[in-house]
Length: 513
Image (cartoon, helix red, strand yellow):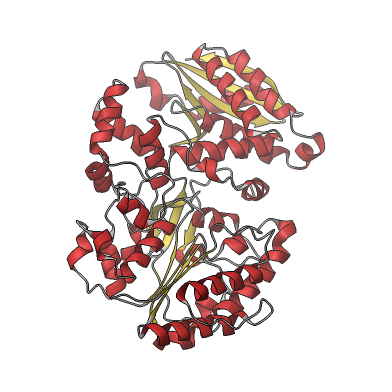
C-alpha cells in the first residue's frame, strides 16, 4: 500500500516520495484543453492546494511526475513560466495585504531573474502587469497564473468588529486583479481558487471570461473522493480496518459513508479527502475536518437567526454562488465553507440544504446547543451524554434533571426575551444529538411529534407545552393518535406530556400505552 499523503500539498513531493495520489487528471485534461480562465470554490482541506500544485507541475512541463497517470501521454508537455501565488499561509494581522502581495511578486521576479522596479507603495496592478509581460518576453511563452486561497485576506476578517479590514482588503484585491483582463494575450492559463465567491470583486466583474467550475459538470468531482475512488484506492485499507475491528467490510464502508460522505456540488456524493486520509491513518472515527477550523461567529449568527434546523431550508444557485461581505448571510457562508451541502434539487436551480454527514452534523449541533445554553461545547456535550445514559437506564427523572441543567445556564433576561424560541431550539438540538434512536419534530399524518426516543425495550413520545399544563400536552398526543404508527414495533410505548415554565421543565405526566 502506498503511503498516505496527510499534510502534503505539493504534487512534486507527493509523486517523488511515492505517496498515494487519487488520479484526477482526466478532469484536469478537460480544464487545460478547454477554457483558459477558471474559478473554483471549495471548502478548506478539500484538495485545492494540491490541485494548484498539480497544475503548476503540468504547465512547467514536468512529464516524469505524471508517469502512470491518465494524462501522461495526452498533452504536449510544453513548459510555460508559472506564477504561483498562495495566500494560504499569510498572517494578514501581522503583515498587511499590500506588503504581502508586493513581497510575493518581488520574490517571483527574483526567482525568474527578471527586473522588478517597484516599491511597496506602488500600485499593485502595475506590478502584476509588469511581471507577466516581462516573463512572457523572457521565456517566449505565455504565462500561467495560479492563485490559491485568494479569499483568505477577507475570510480572516469576517467577524463583525473586523469587517472594515475585510472591506479594505477587498479594495486592495480589486487593485491587484484590475489589469488581468487586458493581459489575456500574455496568459496561457489562469486558475483562481478559494473557499468563497464574493460579489463586488473586480476579478469576477471584469474577467467576464472567467469560467466558474464550482457547480459545473467538471467541478462536481474534481476535488473530493467519489464512491468508486474510495473503493479503487482504499479497498485494501478498509478491509484491514474492518478485520482489526471485527466488522464486515460492508459494515465498515457504511460507517465511513455516514461519517465522511455526503458532500455534493450539484452531482455525485463525495467523501471529504482530509477526513478519509486521517481516518485511514488512525483507524478510528473522529471529527478530523471540523477540528481544523470552527466558525464561531457563524454559529452565533445561526443562533440569532434561529437556524437550528437546516433540513427544510432551500436556496437558489445564484444566492449560493456568492455573497457580499457587507451583508453576510450565514447559510451561504456555511455552504461555501463546507458546513452545509446540497441535499437535493427541488425545483430548477433551487436546492435543499443540509449537513453533509455525521462528522459535521454532530459537531455543529453541539456548538449550536452550547450557544443557546450559554455554555461551552464540552459542557453541553457532557450533559447530552448523561441524557443518553438516562434513557439507556429508562430513567426519565434523570433525563429531565439534565435537561433543566441546560435551561438553567441561560441568562434570565435573554431567556425571557426569546422564551418560546429557546425552548424549541434546545429541545430540538438535544433530542437530535441523542443519537440514531432519537428524533426531533417527527411528522405524522395528523401532526408533528416534538420528540421521539427509542431504547432497546421502550419508545417515548414527547409533546412540550410552554406556559400550559402537562396534561394538555398529553391529551394532544392521544387525540392526534401519535402512537398508532409505532404500535407494530413491539416496544412498550410511553406518552409524555411536558410543561415548560420559567426556564425549566415544571412538570411532566406519563401514560403507558
